[in-house]
Amino acid sequence: MRFKLKRTCKCLALLVTCTVVYLFANCGLNGCSGRSEYELEPIHVADTHPKLGQMLNVEDFWTPEKNKIVPNGPGSNGAPVETESENQEAKDRAYSEYGFNQFISDKISLERSIKDTRHSACKERKYPQNLPKASVVIVFHNEGWSTLLRTVHSVINRSPPHMLQEIVMVDDYSDKEHLKKRLDDYTKKLGKIKMVRTDERVGLIKARSIGADNAVGDVVLFLDAHCEANLGWLPPLLERIALDRRTAVCPTIDFIDHNTFEYKPMDPYIRGTFNWRFDYKERPVRPEEMKKRKDPTQEVRSPVMAGGLFAINREFFKELGQYDPGMFIWGGEQYELSFKLWQCGGQLENIPCSRVGHVYRHHVPYSYPKADATLINFRRVAEVWMDEYKEWLYDKKPELRNVDPGDISDRIALRKRLKCKSFKWYMENVANDTVRSIYEPLRASGPVRNPSTNLCFDSMGRKAGGELGLVTCHGLMGNQAFQFTFLDEFRQDEGLLGC
Image 1 (tube, helix red, strand yellow):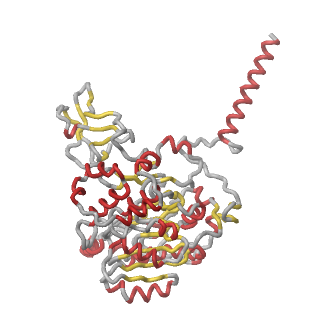
Image 2 (cartoon, helix red, strand yellow; image 1 turned 180 degrees about the vertical axis):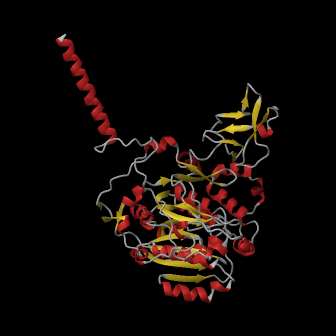
Image 3 (spheres, one colour; image 1 turned 60 degrees about the horizontal axis):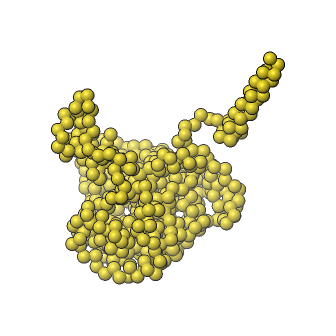
């Protein structure tokens, strides 16, 4: 009996020891907090950086906003502002002229406060005090006064002054009076503003290259003309480029409602990608990858950038040939630059701790001087960068086969000079789990049927994102034909379904 008791005690002691070791290994000294398997833990960052020297908590960087008293007017803290019924006509005029509710925007302070949408770990994160200086390039064409100047004020107010070299404002041939002498006089008082004006309408792509040519900062950082930089937005971007000059970075793009100008946070753990019609897509980091992440401030590798907001080392941007000079106006430039980055020795990252709000227009309020610009741009990207994979694009967009891409010899020579990798390498190593290819079989396809009722899901002819119906199975496929992909998508062809 005494022997059995002794053996039992030893077993219990061993069990307790194992339990303690397990808890310590998985929970640390502070014990387990009961967090879910998808919740992330903040990292403990050193006080010095081996390459960049002394570190400083991001909240301790001085910014001009800290000395300002921000008024509590309409839209304060990013709150929505509704249009009263008697002002409906003014709202309609604003939408017609600008593509968003400029009437409401003009009621909101140019220096309004917005909600801090960062993860709590971002506020505890330390960054080097000495980082490269940024030239922020903002291209505008007939932009509204308040949306344009709110972008400028947010950059100035929320950036450490020693990291902001200048703001290069490129006027792409605007004809609105408020964007001429009035704007010149206003921006001269702000300081750090360099105004560049084109002699003709050149479009976003060429105007951004003009901005980059006029920039003198170590980093060129592109923003759209209707943005609001959030707290602590700049150091996280500059740090990644300081560590590797061949890294381009994008902030997490928060959503500003085009009707009420409400500021809404977006998921920072997403990656940009595309389908074979060259529709830009965003896909979340896969659950198995999220489980491996222990630091919510960690960058997210992204196959494709959204295109409107990003930062890149200015000299590296030149080495890559900047934007393709043969492209017109807007469209496709984010694919050309993203493919070029990855294939030619660089990389692209989304930065969770950098937040910038962006107004997505309801519609584009002006016409483009070249109607087929996007098709030409797509064709140039395909012919220069996509190798045999261009046929997949042409299969989904057959109209591209008849488009003249113009002279692409300099771009092909650039690719050879930079010794860039193949598009097959890009597909297998960068976009491998974000883009469907003919080599990855579907997990399932066909109708989705309840055998006991013989009812099937039916798209009811609705577009992607619409609600599904439930009707008697007819066996003719059509609206009842669905696909379950290796990307865990439930869809009809390329369109994702709302279910």
